[in-house]
Amino acid sequence: MSAGVAIEARNVTVDHHTTAGVVRALDNLDLDVEAGESLAIMGPSGCGKSTLLGLLAGLAVPDSGTVTIGSDTVTELSERDRVRFRRRNLGMVYQADNLLPHLTVEENVALQLSITGVKPGTGGWSSPTDVLSRLEIDDLATRLPDKLSGGQRQRAAVARAVVHRPAIMLADEPTGSLDTSSAKAVIELFLDVQREMGATLVMVTHDPAMAAHADRSMRLERPNGHTE
Image (cartoon, rainbow, N blue to C red; front, top):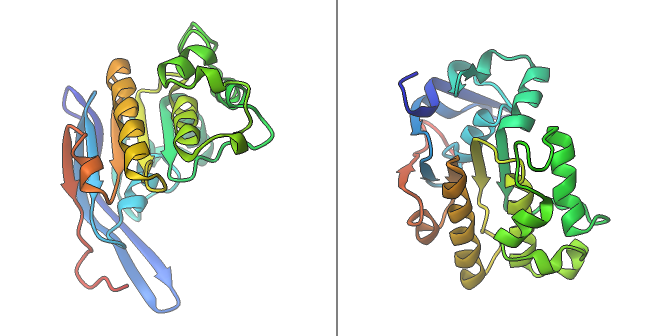
């Protein structure tokens, strides 16, 4: 991997086996993302955007090719080691906030610190409240998720994803369920925090307005022969 590159994918191919036959999701994909860069990935439905994000997260391995993040070739790790790698090095945000409904906002964020094994003030933010303040929702710390608006819930999800200061951020349609005003506010804060941390971000989005906030964007197309 070249100096300054945080994410490298080489010759990545993924086939999905369906009742209708084999569908190629990614075909010999190459990708480089610089350390600290924010990259927006766009493209039509079925072009492999979410498949690629899952590979970067170590949630799956390709049929062929390699994915390297930092000094780790993720595609060569065992499933258990990929889980450990993901917990310590990645922060993940999805369209659904996935907050635990029986925990307050602060408790949801604190739980993420516990899962990653990072103690406040050592590798992460000084406290869960600190990151909630940075996301401008510290006044909501004691509320349960069902008492929040969509934009507030997504800010809480971002806070949970960044509380351990991960080196890599992955986001799959992080503002897809929000109205335009809320989406703009969330993505701007999200990218501000990502840049403050010096983290590398790969974000899947269908919205050109959201992609425009990233440092760079790329478009995936369906591999030849792919059908809906």
